[in-house]
Image 1 (tube, one colour):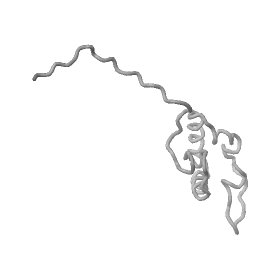
Image 2 (cartoon, helix red, strand yellow; image 1 turned 30 degrees about the vertical axis):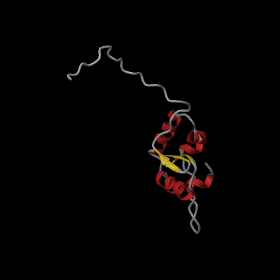
Image 3 (cartoon, helix red, strand yellow; image 1 turned 90 degrees about the horizontal axis):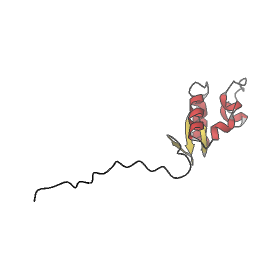
Image 4 (cartoon, rainbow, N blue to C red; image 1 turned 45 degrees about the vertical axis):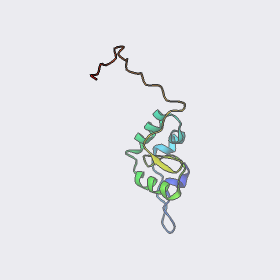
Length: 105
């Protein structure tokens, strides 16, 4: 995340002092592939003092991917969760009864 992305005060305003933001220390976490890392990044955003401004800025800029303001962006859209790579596991099928059900004719 760039220095100005979260704290851009806009034209004609004074810049604020740098804040202690989690995205400044682990920026790769906010662009991770792992669903567990994505959940951690979203959790770190929960108590961030600039969460609302970060999300608003990401929507305004049309960010293509990553966690911004506690929301996960993928292809410019907010999605609830990220699925792991690869095919999903097959669900264990319930065992079928070998007896056929008998119906009256």
